[in-house]
Image (cartoon, rainbow, N blue to C red; front, side):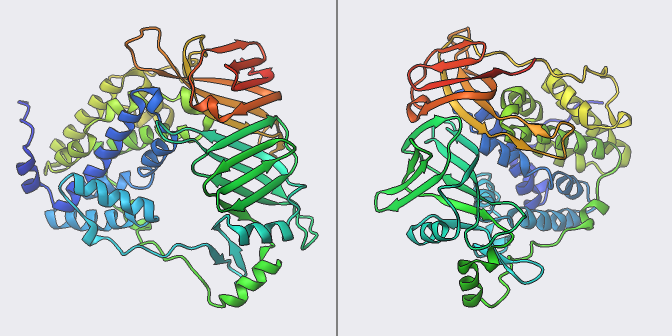
Length: 477
């Protein structure tokens, strides 16, 4: 078969419905941005990569269903429903859809639902008011201190991260004993988030107590005897099933007697699964979704340097427009051949990394022919070397009990991610990780995220200049 030349942008617009082009442009924008962020570890933004990959967990099949619809009207109709649903997941997602489709020359803002209200509190199924998110201001700091034992707060987790070239941010979690009610359910959980850290001093690994201060100069979160996090502002999420019976919960319920529900997302439900593509189009959809789920694994801090984000994104480059072209083939045999060729091309370009990730997630009868079954074990990530390194992420977790695990005792740990200079000075920097269990020492300042240095590692000890010192048990091999 003689290959057909690629369609020009004008020809593509004539061939494919406008909203379907916008839908495909969102996929291509996601893949291109992920590849850009993964090109050099110094610019890696774990949260943005996670958000972009996460879009395609619930929207990949919708794209294929729209691209393979039997008529132009049906392709446009399905694409409109899908894009409207995709965008209706908070203000950040909606803004991204509006920006990316406008940049691609196929704006869809007029088709979207208007922005929904920001919900800070809801009511549960029994009608009891429940907490969600709120800013940490003098009023909220006061009622938190009055209704919970902040000096007795139990440290659970700390994550400090620098997203690419942006400012570091922090997320810290505590268990809070209640003052207003004695229950056997266990403490409430408070997650505090500072989006722009201006100061950090941590002397752990264990910190006892939380001491927030909110003033005109910003927020200071005192941690234990000598630690602190500083920033211009902070917000928090409080998870407490008994909050409705607290003084603040009762005041809020009295002031808001109506059931404050979030707007229901535009329904798709089983409609999209009933329209899931068949044949080789389904195979291609499974490969694409599996690759995006593999990229989404960077949401787990310990998987960042183990996930071949760059190879996966390279394999899928240009996928959106190619899916539309394959779906536009009207006869079934030709469409199957086009999607099989596209799947094979993805696997060839992505190499062993993409083949392995897809193989881990696909049934054997859907694995493309012509590819040997790869080893299911991933190669060990490169260890941290004595080379210039910039700290990107610290994740510190206290010991906990998880009855869902085979071994329910989860030890305390320290997980570090670095951007590290390659052996070739002209090559991009690479991601490297380091892990310690049962930490005995953690001393950290904000300068560790701003000043690259050469790490010094010995079994059970890590230092990065004068800004970071950690000791503990080396990760089991």
